[in-house]
Length: 129
Image (cartoon, rainbow, N blue to C red; front, side, top):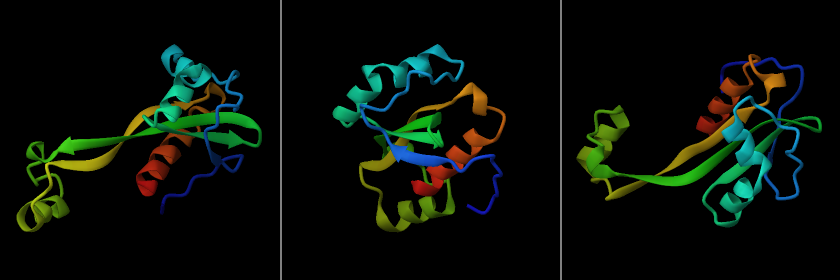
């Protein structure tokens, strides 16, 4: 990632575990808070419907995101999306379903909003993908 971000902390991104304390997390949106504070994130993890990562500032949960396995049907993909997609359409013949990742949930605690942490995480997710 060529863009530089300056935070007052070094974001630590770790795997979600069912024993993580998420009770103090508040992004200002009740449905997103509920996802990370209840058994919903645990169920997604156990059923392999989504992979959640927690973002910490030392021991404070500052953000989280959930990526889910996904695929899109290649007939909905006409090749005009990118130069590489056109090449795949012409030369390689896309399979019926193309695997991808879906950003299922993302939340940034109110203490960390307006500090570009969300933008950093989106770029991190794209680079990781």
